[in-house]
Image (tube, rainbow, N blue to C red; front, side, top):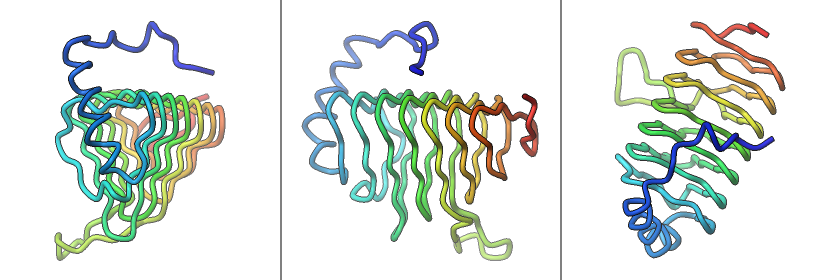
Length: 178
């Protein structure tokens, strides 16, 4: 299943072409892997990019926050739409499959801060998101979670447990609704 073209915003041609050139010239040398036809438009923050792999044909929009801490890694598959202001933070491992749509302001983090020492951070476990997954605006995916193929996460949901393939979850904490 691919993402319907009606759901994906039109590529802003001049700005897109500029960032496409930056992606080809700089990102392909800096990231662990940065495949053909992937574009990052105006990132907010990039950290640990030598531990981040990005597959082909990914559209990554303004405000992305990508950070892989020491000993962590982020792997992004192919043909993904990553919306504005998405936050991907790996203290462990974050794996995004193929044909995923992460809408605006989604947070995906394996890290958790110490209650008494906010500078101390550790992983709650890896996050794996299967192919053909849709994650709604402002959803939060926490460490130790696997989201199965074809699942849907509703806007504003906080996912703290695994989501089976083909299921829709919503709410805080996220619960199965279909």
